[in-house]
Length: 144
Length: 149
Image (cartoon, rainbow over all chains, first blue to last red; front, side, top):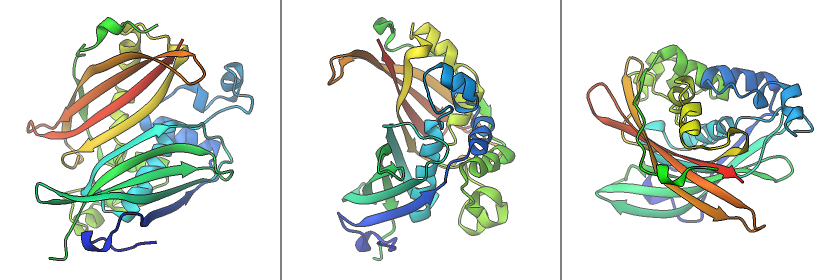
């Protein structure tokens, strides 16, 4: 995995991120509900979740999984170099799931004097099922 | 079923004062113990003015302001059938404790699509442009809501 943070060190196709989160716990969903303000009981109340068709009970907030992605991205590139982060919510995550986030450089270019790197990102559970996929842009420093 | 004629609707601003404790609380709930979110000195040492808001922080003013149900009602979306399809942030500058940010929510796109399996759904894009107390752009949030029909 590429650790280099300089534009010159990063190439299209490089793997840039690897972060494992979890296993997800119900307590974390309660904490995230309070922190984010998303109190949809689908995420905290097993009876409610079952009543609306989730046979195993509560599911994680999609935004919590995006939070994991944000953590993964900013463990590779400093927060103040992140220009854009976008995801698509592809699947539901449940307590017990371990989420692994990985990323790959898909483009690098100079825009208005900034060295922009675009990477794809994907978050999968222990079965390989995709929970979140997306991409981010970051401005990297140059050695020059 | 969403009222597709509502495209272009702008809603009243979301005004939110950013607190240091909320930044720390969100980072801890995510399990992101990066010291820049937890400790002012560590943040300053890393080149920040103060503890910056984490990448997904702007979900906090949107959810805590409590206006999302109003938007959904106004757009005639069936709450029980709506899914959060996508979320995207563009960052223009850092958000710090003490900042008062103002977001203008706007419905930028509404369209009906047919899935591979043949079922129809409405795709609603809500954009919120946030500025700070100095009138500077800080970030843009783009959320895609999907209503199954």
